[in-house]
Length: 292
Image (spheres, rainbow, N blue to C red):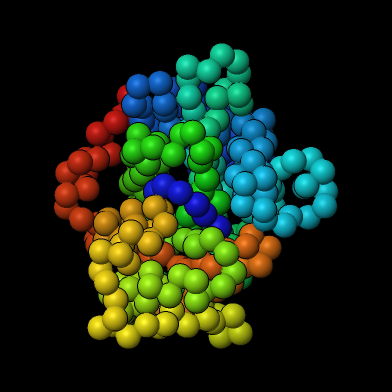
């Protein structure tokens, strides 16, 4: 479940008994703009701090409902945190330890890791299994739990998140990315214009076909195509989804209502080959645009 902008420092590709991505080297910064930098979490303390940021955004701001124990600890945490790599954006101008500097975060889960640890989070809402089976020669990566503190929801943060995501995808030879993009609220009809625009213009086709799970499927076809005002529809898209559309992403068929997080979710699908040349040129084919 995600909000706000788009979308890790290199971590050794080795099994982790407790938390993946710990004990990363100190020279692992993937990108830097001014006082902001992006990298992977280096230890369990930084992952805990990222969970605290997620709690502020998802629970305190968006009023998500989480398990009682997590709520008591003021952490948004689940089992996937143990196996994902955690992308961070840090404000290095803040005095204190790195844990005090984390202002944004994103979870990344590679297909090979998911296959060994219980699958993808998105599979609880969307039928991603059939998509994976259709592409046995491709490597997929799931993007999830994106959040940024309100005062840092800026273009610079967006650029750094994508810088880190792109560098990570290149490192691991990822062929396609997917993950949930969210609209606020649990009534899809309140987003009829934006959802219908996505349905008529951005829906997956052919080999990339993927749908919401049948028992959760909510139609996105809420308005006829001739009734859609393009400019207003684009303005109604959440920043995360709009950003991915600009990159060349598609959306799966059907939306899913997540009552716990109080969102209406769509599945973003972004094959690497679809990424706009404009953005590849901007960030660099080698992710060197903001590399430190």
